[in-house]
Length: 190
Ligand SMILES: [Zn+2]
Image (cartoon, rainbow, N blue to C red):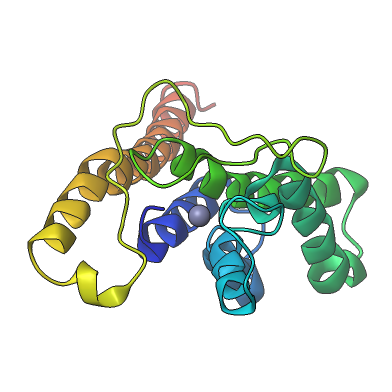
């Protein structure tokens, strides 16, 4: 996996880009949902094997789980808000996609086992053909030291800088739209 921090940063960036709500819970959930799939490591303490359905990178990293979590998050946190059907659907898709971003990033890492994208229907593990992301050590001890630094630099290049650039692009577009609107309304005012 990339580090939890990077997974959450993807959610934060997505929130900035697709912001639908200013509620605190929207932001907290945007940070938490992309990190939740790695809760599966708990299974190790109960003797679950890495390659089991409930093993690491198993069902919690699947498309099915991402969709389910998107729906659950909406039901628990947003259902009572009286939002339009379109906004509700948007939020379900949004939370599903940011959860799915976790499995996608794991599928781009160069170590560990693959991701069970199609669990529970098919427990095969997959990687993408292109795996530029350095796998992060799961135990914290190994994280400090040279290996940790390597992982952080790698995530900066492949995750943190790209998502920051996307957020900047979004804000530049908004500014540009506002400016052109101002210029046009100035030029064509009556
Ligand atoms: Zn993971």
